[in-house]
Length: 585
Image (cartoon, rainbow, N blue to C red):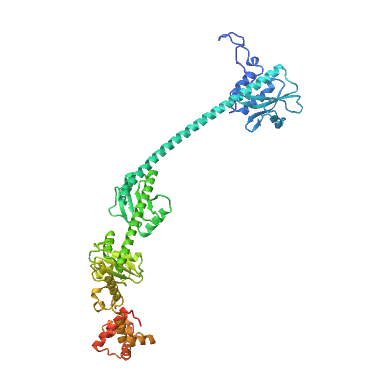
């Protein structure tokens, strides 16, 4: 801080009275001489100005300006000691400096002379305090000072040194006071941060303990949702990945829960998945339960007033982790049970130990001691994948026990207690899959595990008869097959082939050699009950073409199609050729 104008040095202060040095004490005895007479060299006035200055460079400049008031002296330069050495104090007077700064460093903090041109006498006076060298004032003259001059210069140096020490002390105290204030501020900030951390840790411990209690009691979606509501005071809910409500805790549950469109749902899932932690979507804070990248569920809290803070976000995030573990555990149990159920039905279809079958069925919650049916389902254009399997399981679901279901090639096979309704199951699957062009085969009743392989073959035979009949889509039960119940797996295939060769051999060979379809034409003719118009339409040929083909069949086979026994044997032979032998030539 620089000195104010009122503090500048003055050699004479008018109208100021002071006591004589030897006057008797008392208010009535005052020295009437002016200050200039009492302090002819202005050192007292200078000391007052120096001691009220806080700026060290200004103190040195004041002392330099006062040097000439003490006698025929001139202040050449002033220096202040710094951590890097001596720093010259800029003077107010114009003119190039005459002191070489390098010489000052050679003094080694002692007083001494420096080389100055045209200056017979010069001296560098050290300004010192309790801590060592504070700076220098370099004074020159045409002749050395006498005793009085030496005293005056020494007095000026001591006054300047004292003022510098005082300024340094004040600066240090000010610095210390500022540092103390800063430390107090830091302490208060640290204490507030510690309180906040203590509060946060307490809240986190509360959340962890609440969710730990939920896990200890068996967990469950509703228990997690209820714990989140009790922690935050905001209604909490769980949805599946498709937006269907699974659990709600808290007030204001809607009577009719709104379901978003699949497009909006997928967009919302993408939006939340791109962020780390819970995300606000309109009036909700949403977190995704996705333990291995797959979204298993959605956990959300209702926050229309936007009152949720960091504690709420923490509780929601940790509840989401508990929900993710719960849903993942449920999925793993479901998949394990599904594998066990599929392995069980696969073994039953192939034939397995009855005692073991009962025990394994009981382990997956299925009662094999009840009457069952084997059902085989095939739908063109739908491979036996998980989606097709789920569609079949959903279409055959009843109030009875859940069926055992598996995939065999491009077919789905299930073992169910309820005999499927012929029309209802097929209609439900046609609606779900978007096409009616599918077939279902149903076995007779099965009363024990050892009868399952037989019933499986019955279901396959019923399915195959349906697929090769005139009306290929629909449901066929083995009980309704009639003659086809004895024409199929389990019979002597060689005898069947011989029978077919006996009645159709000539036609089969002719078709093979001439790339014709006489056997297929005869089969369709019999399927249509001998009706020319229906058979021609089924073969997509003209009526006259059908007549020509039938005449060729009579000529090549040498069979009378009007004979009742001949017609019966030919019709059975075409059925065996088509259904059992799959049209082999």
